[in-house]
Every structure is written in structure tokens, then in C-alpha cells.
Image 1 (cartoon, helix red, strand yellow):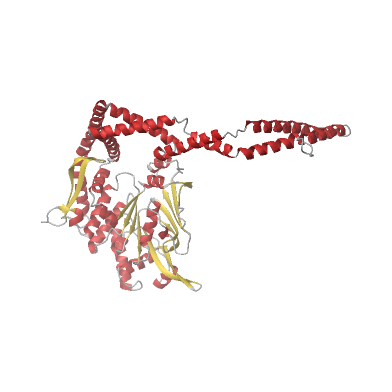
Image 2: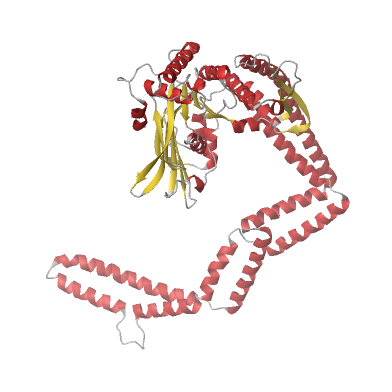
Length: 590
């Protein structure tokens, strides 16, 4: 269940915090008030694409934060663990920040996450139904997904995808072996050339280039390094040409004086220890510098040899890299491919056997899926028809027709087509072509209600799914949404008062212009309506004046009608807001 949504500097929203309840949550407001922006914010939480266009003018970043209550048996817990994210008991907090610099951030339960992890976690969190989904239903693969979801075939679909991808890879390997003799001979010659080039290079290790670069730094700066070592050794041990006493002699003299003074004050024994240790270290430093200077080489031939080797390795990385580790990997790959091509007949036979075995496994599972889908498509069609009958489409015929593909794909060997005849006497036709916008809205609602008890999606989001309907049909849609909300949280954006009347929680989106100093800015507020305010909003949606007695009476009657049809207690909050508040006062409160 979505408990809270907080939005800051998003589109025209300055800052809103919205509390959602269980059951049916209604979101209403004037056209252009900003209702669709709430859906955009939720889409971002669910893994939608971030864009700097979402950031409110004048702000550097936009943020959206959502708090979900997750049941103990939800698969979201497993998804969190698989992504290495913190799975807090009962709660899921997702936050997305979109910055103008493009450095966007995702947080899941306080931990940083990437887009793949976010989408894995939210995949089963919310079921979004919008007019865009109606467009998606024109795609056969999307239609097949609905029947598979109805039948609980998600695991079998995943297995089919795995087997299909394996079969495709084996076919690709077979195709590469099935080239004609001229192409094969050309490929063998080219592979032999590449392998010979890499064998001649005789790579020592995957880090040889780095080792050479380090040695080149030393050889290229050998003169300066030698001069430093000689100078430093002279400071320690002294030189014939220097009048400055050697560092070692100075420390020795200090040590002798300290020993003499310690006879007067034993505390100086600690100084004697430090000086003795310092003399030993300075002595070791001098011998190290002498040895280092003697070990430096200024061999020009070695420098030329290293430069030539470095140039060769750079060339190999450019051709087979980008790193020497990649060069070594490709070397092994070339050798393997050459062995297969030189043993062409045996390799071709093995590849064909592998393709046949892979295809047999795929077709076995695909056949099983076809049998189940045939039965589930019939059950799904019957269930949708029953739902449509309750949505004033009682004469409509709906059918999910299973079709066979010429060759398998990631879902098996099946395709699906939704067909409908909305009125008696009309022939069945593709749903997306023969159904009107209002009919499509009701079909989508019927389908969502059919699958609402399948799986563990607990939040259904309907974005103006009631488009194109009105009157008694709108009442039926509202009742159906309330029915879906019996066991799931439903959030519905609507312009229809008949639908809004069935809500158990009602939020109103209000847009206004506020003056800040000399400037004016558009501000969006989301107001949770009490009983009196709700009557006023229903009256507004009915097209009447909110303070008109007849309009308010109509709104009250509609709320009572929704309560009676729901049979699940009052649709509006039970507690009134005494004393009676005028429409003007309510507007000011917003």
C-alpha cells in the first residue's frame, strides 16, 4: 500500500505531501490543475525516465519520495535482498532526485541504488492503468502477457525466455559454421594471421604494458635520479669537495656530547637512545643511496628496446584490446574458433545436435504453455465478459484468441489477439480497432479486476480510465473500482462525479497563483477533503455551484447512492465537519 507521497520542485509543484489510505483513493480537480503531474511523479518512483524538464523553474533539483507498506509475503522483500538493498520490516521508502547537472540519484530504504535495482524492486509494486496502456494493448505480446498473468504463468514465461535465448545462441554458432568453403577458408587464413601475430608478440602478462611504462619513467629520468642520489649520499657521508660536515658526523658528535652530559642528568639517556637510533638510520640511508645510484642504468639500447616493445603492445591493444587482458582473451577465442573451423565437419555436426537438443527443450515447454494458455484464455474471456456485464456492456462479446507463431520467440510459440463485438449483430474484430474510447476504458477496468486477485500487486493506479463514459455507465465503473479496492489499494484520477462518489478517501488538486514580492508563481496544493468539503467537490464536478442548495443536494444524493451500491460501509468519511462551512471558506482553506 502507498502510504505517503512527497514531491518537491517537480514541474509546477513547489512542495506537496500526500497521505493515501486503504481502499479507493480518489484524486479530482479542475482540468490543468496538476493531477497528471502526480502520476508523472509516481512513474518516476517506479523507474520512469528522469529529465531535467521535470525540475521546477528556478530550482536546482526536484525530488520525489514514496513510502510503501509491504506485506510480509510480498515478493518485494526478495527483490530487495537480491539487489543487496536493506529490507526494512513492513516499509519501503523510495526517493529519487533529479538534478540540473544530470547527476540524478536513487535511494531505496536509505541506500543508493541504480535504475536496474529500482525497476527490479518496483516491478510488482504498482499496477498502472492509463490511456497509454490502452495503446499498448494493440501489441500481441502485451495481450498474451495478460492471459499469462491471469493463469499464473510467470515462472513458465521466464523459463521459456531462458530456453529461447539459449537456442538463439546455438543457432548463431551453427550459422557461423555453416558458411561456404570460400568464406571458411578466408576466415581460417585471417585467424591464422591474427594468432601468428599474437604468438610472435609473446605477451608476458596482462600487466606487461604497465610494467614497461614504469621502467620507461625511470630510464627517461635516470640522469636526474642519479644526481639526486649522489647529492643525498654526499649530505650523509660527506664529499672531498664540501666544507660542510657530513650529517653522520654531526649526529655522532651530538651523541658523544649527550653521553657526556648524561653523567650530570640521567634524563638525557632518552636523547642518547634517539640519537643512536637516528645515527643507525642515517647510516642505512647513506648505504641505500649509494646502492641505488650504482644500480641505476643509463643504457640507451635498453631505452630503445622498451620504447619499441611499448609501441607493439599499444598496437595490439588498439587491434584486440582495449586492455592486454582483452588481447589474451581474444587470442584464446581465435585459437578456439580456428580449431572448430579446421575440424569443420565434426564441429558442424556437434553444433547441429546442440541446436536440435535446445529446440526440443524449448518446444516441449512451449507445447505445455500452449495447452495451459488455451484453457486460461477461455477462462479469461469468460471472466472479462462477466465483468463487462456489470459495466453496462452486458451484450458485448469478448474473446482472447490464441494463435500459433511460425517459429518460437521469448514467450514460446503462441501469440494472442483480443477480439470484441461491443453490440449485438456486429462481427468480432480486433479490440483496439473496433472498440470506442469509452469501451476500451471499461474493458481495461474489467481486465484489471479479473487479475486483481492474481499475484500480490497491492496498489492499482487508474489514470482517467473512465474517459469517454458518463451517466449510469460511470456509476457502474465507480462501483467496479470500489470492488477492486475491497482487497487492494486503488488510486484513481477522475473527472466524473459518479466515480468520485465511490471513493473512501478523496483528494482534491488545486492550482492557484500566489504573489511573492513583485513576482507571481503558480502553486499546486493537494487537499484531503472532509465530508462537507467532499460534497462541495462532488457538486463542482456535477457542474453546479458549490453553494447552491440543489447542487449540494444532488451531490449528497450521489454519495448516498454510492454508499448503498458499495455495501461496504460509507463511501465518504463518517464524521461531519461542524459547523457547516461555506464554499468560499473551504476555498480559502485550500
